[in-house]
Image 1 (tube, rainbow, N blue to C red):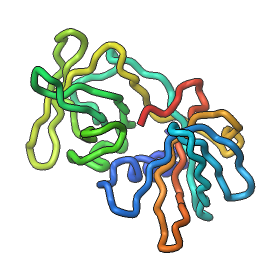
Image 2 (cartoon, rainbow, N blue to C red; image 1 turned 120 degrees about the horizontal axis):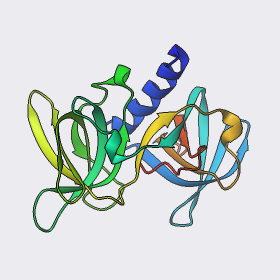
Image 3 (cartoon, helix red, strand yellow; image 1 turned 60 degrees about the horizontal axis):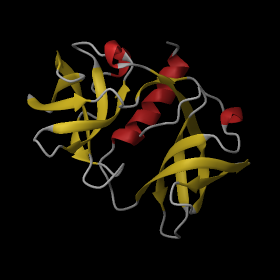
Length: 199
């Protein structure tokens, strides 16, 4: 993987992995328009948000992966929710490039759906239990076991360019809301390989 892509993905993952802050807004939806540095996105709830892209903004895509790609020692980001029968079930999985192992390590609140969590950690074990179940280790030996149903979206990061931000294309944007109420971001993940960012 080229150094430039490393930098792009690192910036993206740092945004995805950061703990939820009062002024952090995660915009999920489809592109309406990109005019200069103004990215307009129609969110899943029908609301339209305009995000100003900072001068040093970065973009990455996502490519489809599968549960069979997950191996012991890999570094994953998994959004999950508690299951009624105990444990956690994955909502989505991101397989990080090996060079970025350890980025954003830990377990924190997430907003993919109510009561969801984001766990970034190293795969200590992979078991076949009604699909795959992984045990992630993070933050000085803490562990979390997460089941990955067969229907779970699993992706890895891929290259992308601003020209991929076409109307109707799915995006995930981690933005900061300033005191003036405006959204500013330096990270955009676009579904430029036919796969919507599941984050």
